[in-house]
Length: 325
Ligand SMILES: Nc1ncnc2c1ncn2[C@@H]1O[C@H](COP(=O)(O)OP(=O)(O)OP(=O)(O)O)[C@@H](O)[C@H]1O
Ligand SMILES: CC(C)(CO)[C@@H](O)C(=O)NCCC(=O)O
Image 1 (cartoon, protein in one colour):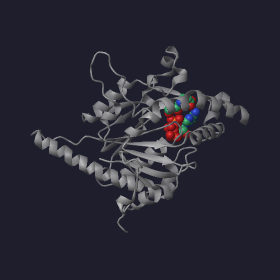
Image 2: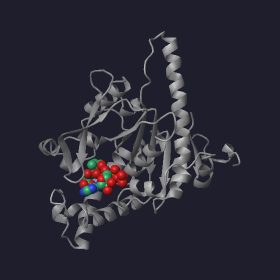
Image 3: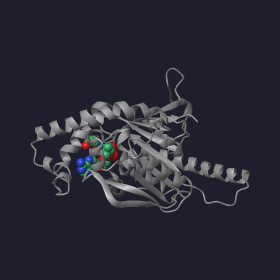
Image 4: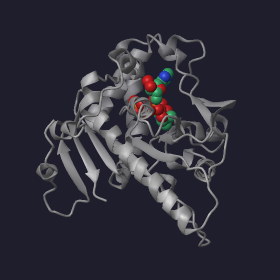
């Protein structure tokens, strides 16, 4: 395969952008000779409801990205060893490489995170890849209700950010069997007593709309880290507001025939609605909660990502912007 010419990537107009932006086709060439390691069936199993992904998308976007990440992980492992030598430290196991995945509700973060997990696990230097979502770190509904925050789910104040920071600090300290709480979209709440265990993976992917948000500034001068201080790399999945709105409403309409019919579903009462009524409910949730959160707290974090994947109206990624080192 021809060596792609990196300099042909679109330079951003004013020359000040910290990103190098690649049209889809140019990015796809950066796969170089990386072999396709997922089958069509495997890709189909990884996609979320209402977030179509094709084998072509995996080959064009995610294979090059997984190749880049595998090079970055190897380089970071080298830096870790160099630091250990400098510190004359005893031999220490390498610590997990942490990748954040951010973006709006309904943009397809979970599909991206699952595809990356599957691809990265097939590179020889990173066989063990774990995935957690920050949904588990939401305050339980009882607590949100008490604080008057049920209409603010997903906003910064709806998370136990301290717990998330301690979780990440434990992972980066090389601790074994670190526990993360779990959230159920079906019951719309954190599941008491259920947790997932993270045991020194080579890579940990942390997915959530809040992962690039700054810490609230402490008044007493103590330093509170950002969640992203623990990340080695981060991906922001971007799409136009109108597309996100449509994807959110379509997913809601489809859930009426599936998850909402489950007796445990928090949205059980919406399963029987007529389509126009359901659209009204979904529009309301989108406009009152998720859109406001997107504009106030998510989009402003986009420029902090190492990589921005921009989706078009049919979920296809159209440009890839890679932050210059
Ligand atoms: N009310 C619901 N009932 C059951 N499952 C849901 C519900 N809402 C969302 N889901 C599923 O839960 C997953 C995560 O949804 P969430 O609202 O956190 O969006 P997200 O992670 O931003 O979505 P995406 O993965 O599309 O970016 C998706 O796979 C979605 O299909
Ligand atoms: C749990 C979050 C915040 C993020 O995944 C989101 O899916 C959510 O529930 N937002 C609140 C409004 C709504 O029900 O869509």
